[in-house]
Length: 210
Image (cartoon, rainbow, N blue to C red; front, side):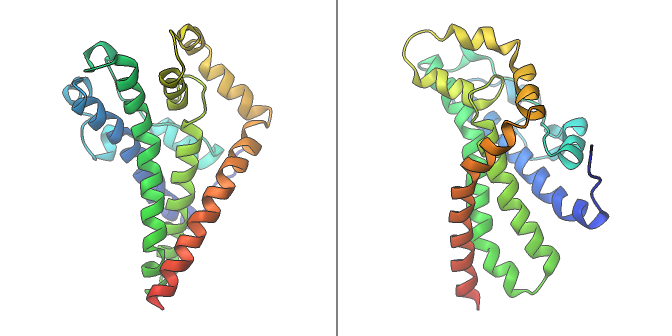
């Protein structure tokens, strides 16, 4: 059953979600372009314009169901320079890494938001941290088509045929993990120490401004 957010919740969630999704996909596009694959650039994805990256259905699902998606950035692996597996792994790492940088930056700026005394701004910064950590951790799961599967394939030696095989079942696997209740505890377990660290950084930031 979906929990419908209030107008206030939409107002504080929207900037955090759009920021996280936009820069996640932009990071993939930018890295692929730098590594020799201009596919995303030719398709107008090398931009921080949210309209180029946000999928409306995926955005609504994030609001109402707690999970969602953006438009995947197209990558042509054989156009990547150097070792294709290594380059594809770097493209995949770029998205989650960018989400972590955004979360870290928001934690550093949390004290500034608190010093302004604006409750909505404080809530937005808090949700920027939580949502970007969640996006990073979720996308690092080793299940196709998530980034984690390509990162794992790039780390493991030998040809990873399992990745090609699982690609056709990845979405089904993710839905099963979600609706069986397995995914939530896994994500919370991994996210907990990261969010604790972000909380320490935010508290340090707050002490600077007060």
